[in-house]
Length: 225
Image 1 (spheres, one colour):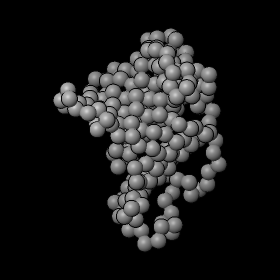
Image 2 (image 1 turned 135 degrees about the vertical axis):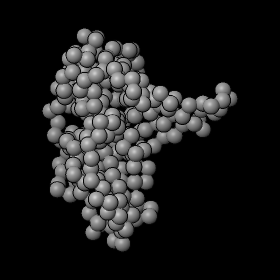
Image 3 (image 1 turned 120 degrees about the horizontal axis):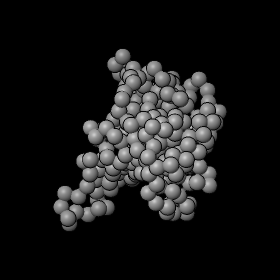
Image 4 (image 1 turned 30 degrees about the vertical axis):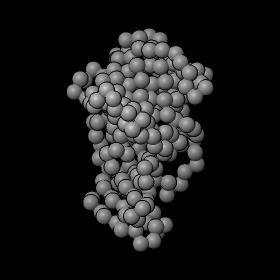
């Protein structure tokens, strides 16, 4: 469960901008860019996105093969407020804001829990709002990612007790969309999240954020609420 929740930090960098943490800014140019992105994403009812997650483990020995220490996963998410429907690595996680279902198709099992608020950056409730305060920002560089010219903003937490020491957010200034996010963990782990496609204001139904057991005959339900 936690592994899947971790990848949600990718989307935390989007609607987080809907707030205005002016007291945390220390780079006016970075502040101006983030504010533009904020206004863009704040106008959307929901976001549907496909993405790739690259997990890079640190080398233990200089001769370690980097390719063997790197895993690439693909997934998709539909997010609306504190509700989400996420699919990645052989599991689906669905949340209606009160309950969360973790479904494993291979074993046809689902675990149900109450959805709890968390102060962790990786909490789904903090999606798009995690850095409302307590962060500093600066423009890092301009580069090309997947054929797009982007501006990278480096975000650093003032709380030194968190598990990461910085986050790089790559923004396409032409569309004001976030293209890539890279989280630098103190452990040496690196998580690179690449948004491959974003769709906004997708039509949803009451079933979009609820696990429907009737669609999975014979499913084993473990209710931990």
